[in-house]
Length: 284
Image 1 (tube, rainbow, N blue to C red):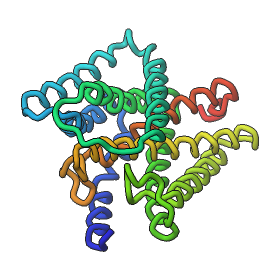
Image 2: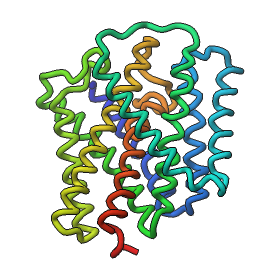
Image 3: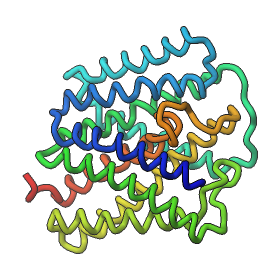
Image 4: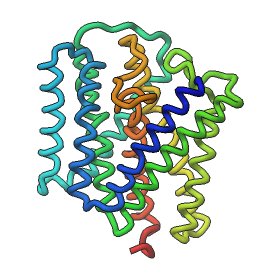
């Protein structure tokens, strides 16, 4: 990556990152849900184009559909279903992982793809459900959401720099020619260190601590899957970026693609660990 583009990406990140951090830590869950919904509006607009919706009216209908789904799911009577729907999103990403490993060629697509149109609802709504549920889960829920964001950012940054330094073997050249196996190893190591830090903060014994580290590594690996899936969809449309809203980064989808797959797994993992081992029992 040219130095000028790296500087542009860094400047954009420095301007954008403080806002989600402040929202996660300072806003009550209902207001955070609204803020996340606003982020999904341009993301849904971009996904509708990747799915082959050409007309402005059609893309507006898709955005409205996503917003309507969020409003329906926020009804208190449906809160009990959030975990189940988050689990369904995780199953979706497991299926995507299986499919990605079977890709042998990328077919150029034209016209509306109904499968991608439907898949976009899971891609966009799944992390929204996971994040708001985790945020409201306990008194340290906001800090766990912040940790998730930092985990994904650390994995992404280390994947980039280790890939540049030691990345000789490509991970999936058909899907993303810049991703390397070394980059994935770097992301996994960074995620593992984040898990060690969180375990220390929570005062976990070695057994639960190891499971937490494993969850963080798994979350980082699925963040790569989210990135690869969006890359596959973009390549099928012969596009480099999902949009141009964020200078140096592309579109909103290009910035949240890792989180779309990572959030459901991290939330489910934390819920399972707490149910089995009470890892948050001493944290309020």
